[in-house]
Structure formats: C-alpha cells, structure tokens
Image 1 (tube, rainbow over the protein chains, first blue to last red):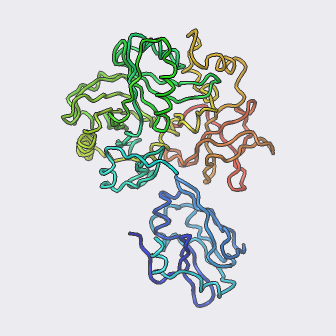
Image 2 (tube, chains in turn brown, red; image 1 turned 180 degrees about the vertical axis):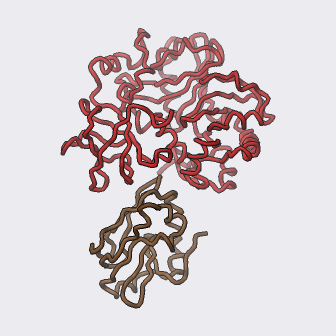
Image 3 (cartoon, rainbow over the protein chains, first blue to last red; image 1 turned 90 degrees about the horizontal axis):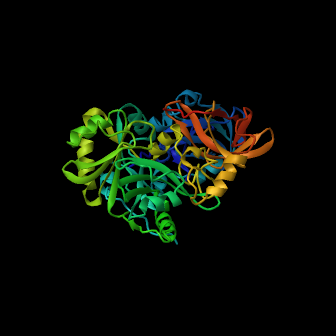
Length: 126
Length: 363
C-alpha cells in the first residue's frame, strides 16, 4: 500500500502540500502518484515568481510511460523550484515526500487550504 | 461496451511476481514488475523473460500453402527453408498494412504464422477470404499456444540450463522443435523484438507456467528478470522495430515505414503490389523517420512535427531510451522533409529539434 504521511494535506490529483506557519508551503506528488507513473525521467517546473491559481497546471512530470500535468493545490506564487530534480528526476520515485519536493510557494488565499484533503481523506480516495 | 479482457496462461504468475497489470490490445498484461528502465537494462546486459502469449498464431497448410502465402504476403514465402522463419508484411490492395508477421516454415506444405494480438482475428479472416482456388487451410491456433520471449546476452546460457535441445546450431531466424523444462513440442526460435540476442519459445498453453517458472529459476543466478510490455516497447524502439498501429498501420504502408526490403517486387503478383510499386517508384507521400532529442521531454504519439512554422508530420512512438539516456521516437513526415536537418517537434509549447537517425540506436 502506498505511504500517506499524516502531517501533510492532499489533493485528489495526488499532490501533497505542507503548509508552514509563515504562509509558505511546499508541494510535491504522492507516493501513490510516483508508483503509478513509474520511472520518472524529467520534471518540468516553473520559474521563481510565476503565479498560479488553484487548479492551474504548474508543471509536468514525465515518466517512461507518460507525461502528467501537475496541478496547483492552491493559488500561489513560486518562491523556489527544486533544482535537484533536474539532475535526479528519479528522486520522485525514491523520496516523493522528501528530496523530491517540487515547489516552494507563497500561499495567496489561505481560505483555499480548507478544501484540501487530510491524510485519511486522501487515503480513502486510493 | 468493450469486450472483456483476455488473460494469458501466465496471468496468476504475473500477479505473484508483482507485475502491474494494464489492458493492452484486449489483454490484461504486465506493463512492468520492478520498473521499465531496470527491466530494459537487464535485457541489454543480462536477460529478461517476457510473456508474449497475447500474440496470435495461425497454421497454414495444404498443397498450395507456399503459393497462397506468396500471394497474400509482401515478402517471399516459397523460398523460406524448412526450419527457418521470415519477417513479412501482409498488405491491403492500397498498400496499407493488414499486419506484420513472422512466418515459420514447418514443412514444405505447412507454416506457422505469428500474428499481432489485436489483429489476430482480422488476419485469419483476411487470409481465409483470399484462399480462392488454392488447396490450403488456415487454422486458428491462438488459444493453443503460449509464447515466451527470453532475450538478452545471457539468454542462450539460461535456456541451455532448461533444455537438452542443442541451441548453438539454431541460426538467426532459425528454429527447432524440442523440449523445455520437460515440456515437449516447444518451438524454439532465435528471434526477438528487442535488439538483443535471444529466443522466442512457442509452447503448449497448458504448460506455459511450468516453463516460465523453470526459466526464471534457472536464470536468476544469471541476472534474469521478468520483463513487461513497457520494456518491450522501449527495447523495440531503440532497435527501430515497427509496432503495428504506430509505424505501420492500415494507413502506413511498408514502403512508407522503411520496410521496403520486405516487399519483393520480383514476385509477379501479391496483394498490394501495384500500389506499393507506385510508392516505391514515385516516392511515398510521407515516410517514417527515427529520431532522438537533445532534451529531457519525451515527444509522445501525436506530437506535431514542424518544418519552420509548417506542420509536416506527427510523432508515432516516443519513449526515453535507457541506453542513450535521452528521448527517442519515430515520426511520419511528409515527402521532402524526411531528411531535413531542421525539423522540430512541439512538446507542450516547446519546439525541440529532431535529430534524425539513419541507424537504429542499438545493433
């Protein structure tokens, strides 16, 4: 069974988000998502400063099998994209909740956080 | 409503081995066990075992079998020696492909033909519809046979552990009948769809699991792993082998696909001859090219190929080449552009230059 850490929030599109007290958040994809994708070969991430609305495509994760869009769990502005994924896209398969975080963002509308799934809610969708 | 999916005799073994099962060509098949890249590299470096029992088989026999096949296939069938196999295409009158096939000559008047899974019923109906006055019968043996592909540089050493049948004397595209893991009546052929050396084994369906388990056990110390359809696809694309529905189809002829060597115009008559001859003489309206990308993005099926700002083609197959470490693929490109050094492909709004390759990426 796939790993669903209790301290994160989730979308039904298999992104996870970890929100910090200062209004920033870190976003990646779940263990279930990486397993479904198989060997990840490339992660296409946005530039610092780019802005996205809730549900916008912010990037693409490419595996041998398919390219999948990444959807922004909240409206946000990009503070940092994980440069390690350039040279080691396979981190997504090995450490989906750790080394393979994808973007660090400033959350624009904290009210949107209420619509995210908690770990139990996400696990129930799998 | 879609038809229910079929399962090969090895379905339970795939599940036991942790295979991820996906629908493919009407079958429930393992796309991977541990990972496509790992399984791909095992085939290039040691060996992989594929269940290809979804492939179909037809037996064609009778006094006129060779003559009949010469009339429906593009390649020459009457000159195949008993104990040898030949790759061929079967075409429509307009030159489009009904299927591509491997034809094994079992006897002067008897052949076994390997059919693509999704085309098997169509192929058998097509052959039967063209029997005419020939003394020949076309038997559907799809359910009777299972097929295993044992591929990789260690394949021969591994197979030798499970059979007393001499293997060294089997030439490329040659075959013998023999016993494997105590199962008699197996057709062992030195063929494959990976670009690595190896064998394909046709065996009685009821004995498939016994043979597969014996090969996996014997091969484990040699680095043999079970391999799925995902690796099968990336391996065949590195070797530039066509896949029906991609590089060849009812719309893409063997001439367009670069398979002109399988079309023997020396034969006075075969289905599709006139259309294919016109294409070969005048040049086809479009042709298939092989490419790699100096990029990280993979150009997938349907991605549009451009010359400048003009769309001139589309991608037919695309994957990541584990051997090259970069994306590779094939595209159908309009006449006049197939040798262009300035083609690009659109991947999600990025225009990536196509690096055309005249040679397969493995040989």
